[in-house]
Length: 274
Image 1 (cartoon, helix red, strand yellow):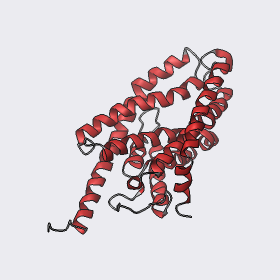
Image 2: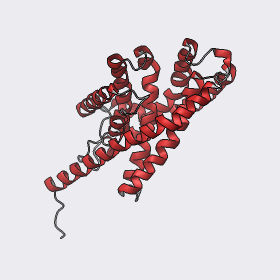
Image 3: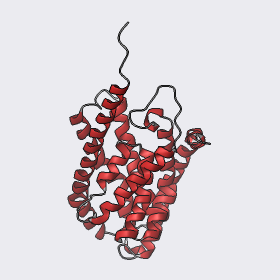
Image 4: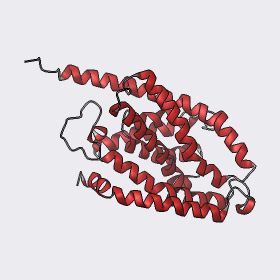
């Protein structure tokens, strides 16, 4: 049972790919039909826009992409293993006690960071980055989902129902891919261990991916010209503050990773040459 989730995700990866392609075109059809950039759906952030956004953005468009992302992570044993404990040839399950504890810890940090409104400074980007870098992207997905729901309940940052059924997992899908990009660059390229190059890579990918993946949200919620005002805020306030917040999480993760790796090497030194 412990490996059932991993086997399911890997087995049905092609299904998720096809589903994602179909979902993309269905979503495109919905966007053309509803034309959310016009006044057809009412004023910005109207109930109609909020509900339609949840359905179109998450359930139609991003859900299959999130499952595809989980399938990618589930196929890489080094990514699933706890930091410093990876052993070649061992098959690691997706969900373990370690996974649940990590999700609970990171979600609590994410929820507590709601003491500052993300409209002012994106402090939650710190624990979000930590969850997908020191831990793995699947842990990050559930951190953003569950932590976002808890934050909305504690600090009133949004409607908890919307967070449960759409905003939370949509946010999680943003970060699960950021985590995949990070793990690929750090663990599977020759440049990933260079901290300067890693930071540069993170900042570039962070700006490109969050812009592309979150534009859909702003499109559904804001007609023109409110859309331009929202994008101005996004690029001049939200993205810069999120960049600094995520870099704090990334740097903390790197410090923890290096400490764990040094501890592992000390506990298990390499054998002397023959």
